[in-house]
Image 1 (tube, helix red, strand yellow):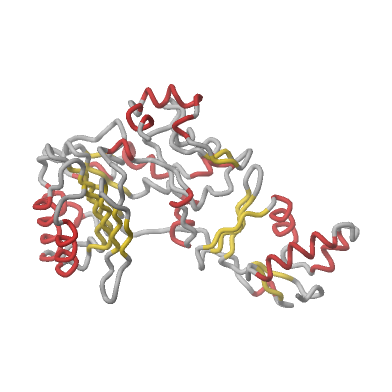
Image 2 (tube, rainbow, N blue to C red):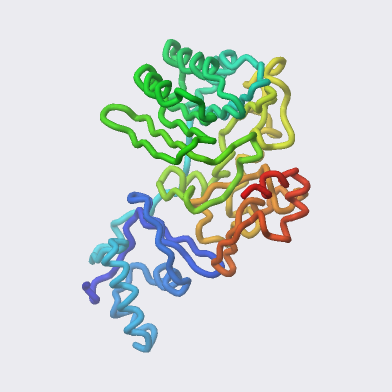
Length: 363
């Protein structure tokens, strides 16, 4: 290291301070490192100075600790040294998307009878790019196949399709044949499978397939906050800084054909059978949840993981407070500890309010 040359954080390495500790989020390499708040403050207050200047600033009392900090930073390529640190611009935290609706969830089960193809036509008018079809209970292969066929044969704006559906005999053959026909299909999650298995994309195919023994009976399965869902990339991070990381530019149709921000939300905006999507998605009542960023949410605003995390406004710790922490999050940013949210006695009232007892009682 060059202790007499000013240091600079790489532009893609962003500091996020929490109540008890902080993170460095490398948005280029999707890498997140937990750091002490003392190191966060040292970097935030002294970027552009030399290590020697920083040591002197602290009266050379903490030289050994400062050396350890900078060895960690330099070894992991979070910082570099330059005599011209002022020429390197700051990373813009702006986020923009030209679409009216960026992503959509369509829920179906054995009783769903709304016109999905009509919904797809309307999504094209909204420039929707990403589609998720969640098939609960018995697999409705004909419906899903018709959706994929429609997207293949039409000039749809949909670029990527994700499917959740239950296991059935012959599903692996169906997936193999579907993969060959429909290039927009990028992810299939098969639940209630007799085995757990991940199949990564091969060759020119983009399809990722996941088999899981877990069971997803309905939309109540949604809203869980888990470290495995963390994503430290530029697009997701900047969107989280400015907007809600789950609901921004999202439209959903629940299994009964009701238009919602999310299928799990209790309130809707009419039925697709009688209401045009375009008449809904421009209304303030529909778009207001898009602006609930993590910096506005109770407890989340104090979390070091807030901008790489997902969010949920459907299930809240306090159902009467739209800025309350997600109910299904078990992380405490004040102690840096994870726990099982479903076992927390302080959440029992909210669990009862949302009728989630069946979900929490499962092993």
